[in-house]
Length: 170
Image (cartoon, rainbow, N blue to C red):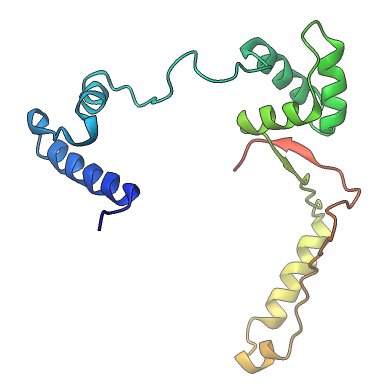
């Protein structure tokens, strides 16, 4: 019985990796006609397997991506619909919201909740310190009696009306 193609390629990859670790590029196997592309990758450092000029051309070109990035940085609280409207008001071709959303994701910009951190006053810090000093000698049993609440929200249709901003991950 023949092995699945994925398993064959995985085994071949492991063999090639072993050859490369030992510095023996001259004996890479000819199996499945991969010797040429593997040697090209070794010699040129070309890891891009996508051939240039193949596939559907991008609707938003590099200049449009830069413009879209600029629009996002002007106001990070804009929705995709607002960004699309602003982008389409410019000189470039008209695009859909879906295209703008996919382009933003491709650029690494994700939709996130804006973080709000309350500012601590001098009084807040004093109260925190006082509370910590009062409870530093508590036993494990005393801590077990304390109830901690974590307010989790669950949405059915993912429409909560909350503001979201575009951010780079991390």
